Length: 387
Image 1 (cartoon, rainbow, N blue to C red):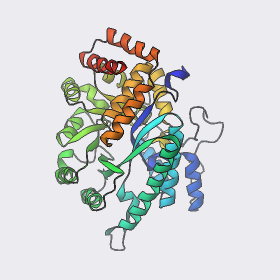
Image 2 (spheres, one colour):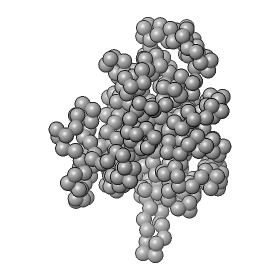
Image 3 (spheres, one colour):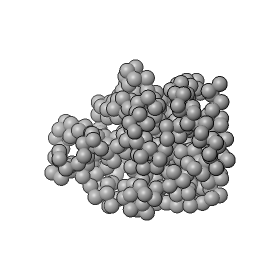
Image 4 (tube, rainbow, N blue to C red):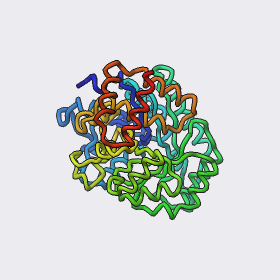
């Protein structure tokens, strides 16, 4: 089984929040740096969890209580404060995943979290200098990991929808005024139940004018209608989107427009109440078999005790994906990546070069037995690269 998902199988992450990537061992270092006293039960102790499943340690929170998760997330995010912190966090996440075969990554950043402060009158102040210092720290880590492992990384700017709408607009305006070549996309993240996409019309327009392609969180906590709305307002990728399985018409739209769902099994298992902390009813396999383009992600790797190898392993063991299908999933991710076309082409070529004779044969066998026309066409197109 190890060979099914090991480092020879190129892996891609399109959905990881940088503050959520902080592993427990790094949270302890940051807490020591800032002399923050963490609660005594903040982390599981050695012997209380499986170190093979959680090699970087494990946060302790009730996985059935979303509020506890948010509290833990906020505590960890508050430890990430300056450029050095962001350098450490980025280097740690990218390095450990690059060792597992990660060849391309997109990290979600929040300028609001990075560089705002509130004055004595309650007004929010934005620091361009602080933003650029922190981004330089992140970009240094990205460059070092690229040099050592070859992993390419790009960043998303983000509007947090459970913040006041004025802060969401200010985030987009700030990004427009402080462009960086590493920022290649824009995300709307945060609590899906905080407002509707139709409430953010000015924000959608502002992002379109920057311009940055959009990947919006939808269809994880809320239903399929939220995915429809995200697409209506310009999203070309969907963060999570697993509720799409509820709507056959939406499935058809996703296929026709080649919109990829950024699925995160470990995250969904914990945060989606309907799954009842289990992957037994997770629709990843159904979405893929229906012909929808999906990719596999870590979302908040530190908080969920995961990494990209673990997510691909779950895809293989829990959902029965074979190597050829996992190659297809990595390729789906690269084909919709927010990266320059020349880099994208090189990465895609690299993936095809990792196919073995057995992988090509497995792909051919899948085509013969595939009942879904859209999926069959996509797999047939993959097979032409063997020529």
